[in-house]
Image 1 (tube, rainbow, N blue to C red):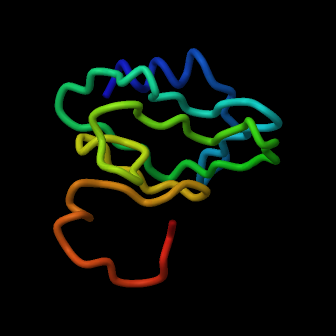
Image 2 (image 1 turned 45 degrees about the horizontal axis):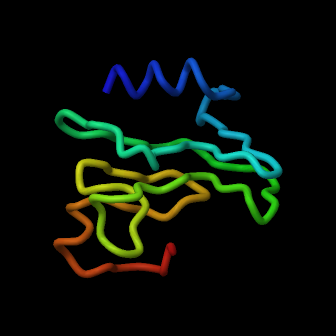
Length: 104
């Protein structure tokens, strides 16, 4: 997880509050880019980060994996993603039926 944390800290602007982290992405910007299919040893977690900002048609909060993931998903099976503003994802979520409101 340390390479991901270092990547985020070095590349992105973060607004820290006492209860959450806000990831402010605006215009045609790409917020978090995993399209280069980064190598993940073990598991990766993106949790409790709030994605905000007004995007134009070219902007994205997350630029998804280009290979190695199931259709309709943004991340591969090594990720657990639970952050406001982007869909909930994770391999353990695929093993059980979805309960609750649609988050996609």
